[in-house]
Structure formats: C-alpha cells, structure tokens
Image 1 (tube, rainbow, N blue to C red):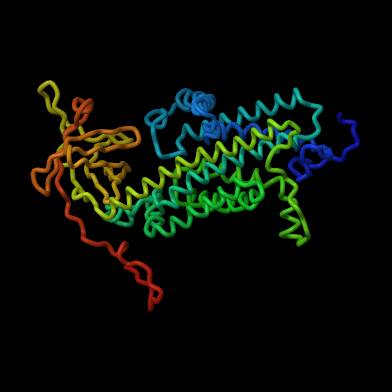
Image 2 (image 1 turned 45 degrees about the vertical axis):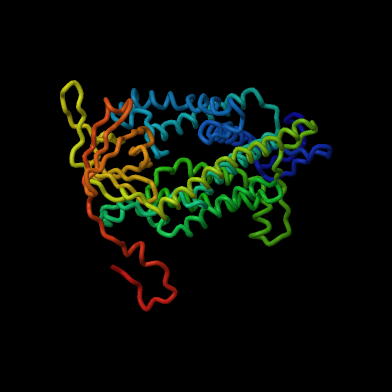
Length: 457
C-alpha cells in the first residue's frame, strides 16, 4: 500500500476497528501528524514503562537486569548534566536512596527520555515513510501499558488494602505542633487516621487492576484507573507528595489505554447514541504461538503479583500484632549522647540521616516503625525490630541498617551499642525516655453519627 491509495485520512487512535486474525482487515490511513505523534508516544511510553515501571521484571532471571540497564541509559546522562551543565552540588547532584521520585536528577532524567523519544520518532519517520497506519503497533502498546498499569495499581492498592502504606499516626507527629507539620505528613496522617478509609482507597486501586487484567472488563478498568490516578496525582501536587512524576505517568498510561475507544465513549455518554468500543486489548495475529505468548505473559503477571500480595498480608499481620502488643520500648527517646570510641579517642557520632544531620530524638512506634528527628526538626522514617532473647535492636533505614546491643539501666534510660561491622563506624547511643500524653483526642474522638456542633479544639 502506498500514499496514492485512495483511503481517507483519519486521526491516529481514531478507534478504527482492527479485525481479529482470520477476518477482513479494514484499512485506514492516519494523518501524517497523527503518525508522527503515535511514533513519539510509542517510544516515550515504552521508554518509561521499561525503564521506570519494572514492566520487564516479568521475565524470569534476566528481567531485573534488563530494567536496570535500560534505566541507566537516561540516568547517566542526567547525572552528568546536573553536575557539569547545571553545576549542582550537594545531595541533589548525586544518586541517593530516597522515598522521593521527584529529585532533580529524576526531572532531568525525564527530559533525557523525551529527547530519546523524539530522536527515535524522527529516525522511525525517516525509515518508515510508506506505512499508512500503526493499528497493530497501537494494539501492542495498549497491551504492554495495560499490564504495566495492572502491576502498578496492584502494588499500590494492596499496601493500602492491607493498611500499610499509611502507617498508624506517628507519636512524633502527634506530639508536633500542627503548624510545624508539613503538608505531606498532614495528608499521610489524615489518611492513616482511620484504616477503613485507606482500605477503601486501596480497594479502588485493586479493583481497577483486576478489571484491567481481564480483557472483557479492561475498558471499565481503564476508566476507573484514570479516576483513581487523577485523585492520587492531585494529592501529590497539592500536598507536595514527592511522587508526582510517577503518578502523572500512571494517569498518562490510563489515558493512552482509553484513547482507542474515546469516540465510542463520547457517542455513548455525551451524544447518547448506541456505540460499541472498537479498540482491541490483545494484538491480533494469525500465528498461534503469538496468541499463546500473550496469554503466557498475562499469567506471568498474575504470578508476579501473588508474592507481593502474600508479603503485604504478612506485613499487615505483623503490624496488627505489634499494635496489640506494643514493645515496652515504644515511645519517645531523647539522645543524651552519641559517641564513637576509636584508637583511644572519643568523638560525637550519631545516627546518620539523609541530610547528614545528627538524630536528637528517636520515636519507637507501637506499629514497629521508627521516626528519627534530626537537629533541624525534620523527621525521617525507619523500622525497628527488638529481639528480647538476644537483647538486640535492629534499626533499618532506606540506605542504612544497624544492629545494636540493647541494655536498659532502668526503665527511663536506654543504651544502644552498635555490633559487628558497625561497631567501628557508628556511635553508642545513650537515650532517656520522654514522658508523653497517655491519650490523644485525635485518636480517641472516633465516629459520631449525631453532632450538636462540630468539635474544634
């Protein structure tokens, strides 16, 4: 087929039917701008899905290594640009473990991805001038983005369905003046205040993932995913949650998946006309082995999700057990001194934080989590586990893990002595317990069906 063929121009992703294998294929011709736009979208969306979403992790043994390699392609140039063109110094100039997905390097990496996608689209245009449409490629893109979105929504959904992502309100936050609380922490605490709300949010994300997984319900799942990810993105933007880039891309995936059926949706919901979705969810092929392969990939995705569900369930069971029987050490501990003795010399040495400032307070939460307050008042999340038999406390952050020998001279004092390889690098902590309120109205208020007036205090 060539450009002279008398086929009317239609926009890309117009919803033209792509017939299944064995039936007559109705050819259409996309507009030149539509073809180029699809090439760019195809390249960019796959670069992000493969490099940042772990889509290729489904491949046994080698998937993670491929993902790691693909992520380095834009990441390395981004680090070089940040350091040598933008002349940034300090933490922002280097890769560092963080719960944030919106670091300066992340944003520059996004720009590098866009340049890669544009270059790939231009090259594709130069070597593929005769093709009139990309309906089969669009079907493959839809298939890949659908599976990527299924895993992402399931991952985020199950850690809310088992209320883990937003842990119970922290002792550190409960004892912080409201005006000192960051929007991020305020939102996190608000959602965690009642686990039922968090579980409903998680159930919506899981429902979207389940609907997307099955081809007959995939369009409904894509619409629900668009609603859920829009809400998440708004939270992230207006409460300064540091996952704006990833949330925006999950919404972009939801929109891209829905685009082939936009015309039918518009006719049905706006024009109130009978309409049938025309987009397809599995790329058509006349080769049986390809049809089997797509089914195998879907089953591999299901197998990939199951361990995550089990892990979330076990973490939830452990957290509930911790809340029922909190450690006697739970509470606020002030660091009286933190010292490292080496070669006969004693120097101050506290727990390191992301900004390198010393920790002045440790909040051992009843849930098994930890909040570390540094000398500037910033809080850092961590986890701890106490072994009563071995008298040890294991403290773990994102990039640092220390095993301490634990001694309690009296109920109001605690000494943590680093062991093993940490003995020569981390300081011994002498801590004293800080008396906290026995209850908090924020936690005790509960639900009231009848309110003569709103309780404000």
